[in-house]
Structure formats: C-alpha cells, structure tokens
Length: 55
Image (tube, rainbow, N blue to C red; front, side, top):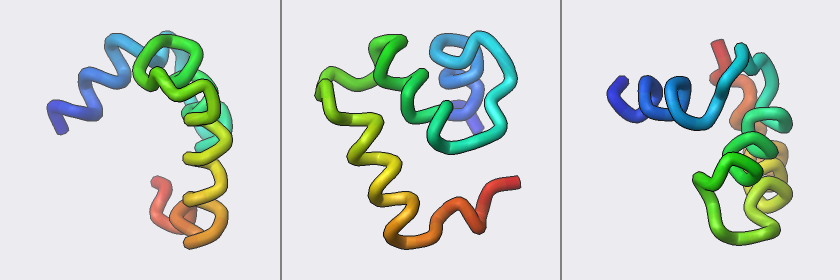
C-alpha cells in the first residue's frame, strides 16, 4: 500500500485507468530510466494477461 501511495503521489498526477497509460507515466515521470521501460512493461502485462487483476 505504501508503494501504491508513492506512485499516486509522485508519478500519477491524475487518475489512471489502464496499464498502458500507467506504464507511459512511470517512464515519463522518471520512475524508470530505461527508455524502453513502458513498452517492456506493457508487453509483460499483455503476455501474461496480468490486466485481469486490475480493479
């Protein structure tokens, strides 16, 4: 829960409802230094159908 609070406070300035937007915001707001982070994260989520756990 602390990690979620940090993300909301520091990296997501608005409500995010999909994983692709979240991945892009994490990269553009400095959470990740890998320039391909968002695309890699999106691929992992899609490959393993992890978005089924989104609430």
